[in-house]
Image (cartoon, rainbow, N blue to C red; front, side, top):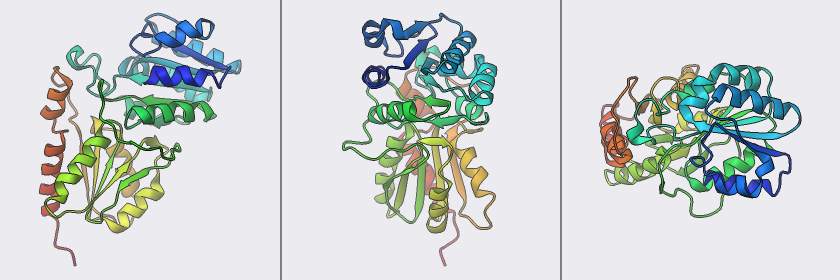
Length: 309
């Protein structure tokens, strides 16, 4: 879907340049490089050089998308992203593909477990994690209009479940309410948005009313939306396919801790450790990120709250 969106974007943005670190096929860019060979560059397996070239092109007025596997573009090229995208504020959109556990059997060397934490720590960098394929397209088009540097975190695996079946308004930095409910606020990002909706259905069978938020933008965080949730919900739950350190849960906790009064937060994420490899569905189940296991954990935590007064 990313490749399809880039191909469609090229028709409207003649200044578009797309770069890859020898992962054009994996990034879905075959059609783009065949249709626009003069606007595509493969720099080889050299992610630091990828960001350097991208920064140079952006300095000359191009809108640049640069892609690689999530851990390589965010960790191997972290210094270059910090200087060229953060400090220099060049108009480069770094795209991490296969983030979270999506690379399955390739294991820990290819998992994007820390990428959001690293990118979120860099000043001037916007961080977006779309919920499904349709939102990937909306993110790509919004990113092209966005005047500054950005990291786009692509999670999930092929045949990612659909969250949106009708068109909707998408704006960077504005969370989307998918479901209303006053007992529990489920705040999810990326691949976990669909799982959160399914978990909310299961919790409804227990009589628990859950709101579900798609927090697609991790930076800047929609703090006004969180303030509204904090005034109504008895429990805030963050759900993400990322390490529990530095991701969505940390971002929400950073905001809540500055409030005089707020509901407790349950942070559901991947553990702060190197884990197993295997099929994507097996990994989600192993780490408790399936709807049934999410619902069970949320229900258990909610039952421990003091009775409402």
